[in-house]
Length: 168
Image (cartoon, rainbow, N blue to C red; front, side):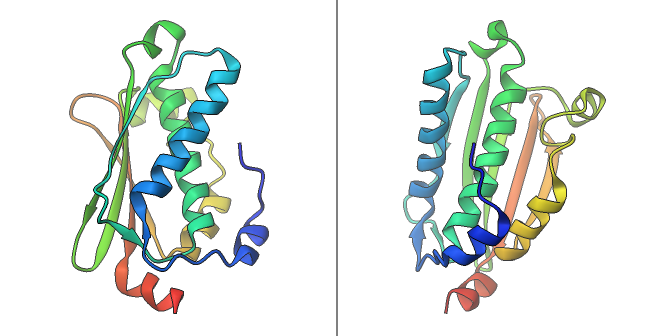
């Protein structure tokens, strides 16, 4: 788990100039897989379906931290128990629009209402104030939705024009 503070992420100045989003997401997933390999805890299947042409033009360190938090939460929610982990899935996708890029992390875990009842996961007691500061750094907003097949989708929307101005 990354222990960097918002201040240290801000000071890194790691501004991407059209960094491939696919590489950022794959790095986050690889780090999570390495961590889980050391624990012996079964890891749900984590798939990345981010086209190589999708770019991110903001603070890469901040985006990595946000994605790390949400992918970890999705894995935790999807796995639930060791028995569930064998059939659980997490899918990270992206869609590019003329004015923004959306990154979605969908899992096969409980619904939003069920998670709120459990007090954990993406809809639970995550430190929203820290996440909000990080979201502000990439001018992003986040949406939580129940998936039709079960589970929750976290969608991060990052406006292109704003992130490109910030990178300049």
